[in-house]
Amino acid sequence: QVQLVESGGGLVQAGGSLRLSCAASGGSFSNYAVGWFRQAPGPEREFVAAISGSGGSTRYAESMKGRFTVSRDNAKNTVYLQMNSLKPEDTAVYYCAADRVSVLSTYYNRPIGYHYWGQGTQVTVSS
Image (cartoon, rainbow, N blue to C red; front, side, top):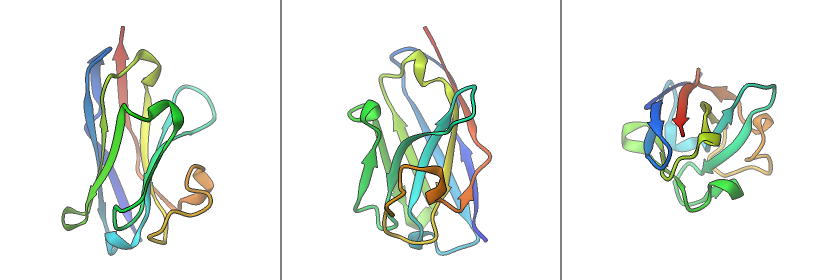
């Protein structure tokens, strides 16, 4: 059973940066692809970025390209989401999620593609 814990959220002004971390325990981390999602008030979780188990493949939501960067350090069992040029519309709870395979699946950009979830970390961007 993989457990995920996000950290690094907080309050930042528009144009600022934050780096989120997703620390994993309970499994061989390099065997798991990881995705980042976010959820503003409302029912749906929005895809942000994903990274394969090796770190060799990454995917981004169109609106995050060029601003967000996903990376991982398997020696530290941690995935990172570097967020730059933040906008008020980036305000949300950010979640990391892990799949049971290392490659990015067909559903890498959908919550159904992941089996393990963290509890989320709040990011608030003020204007």
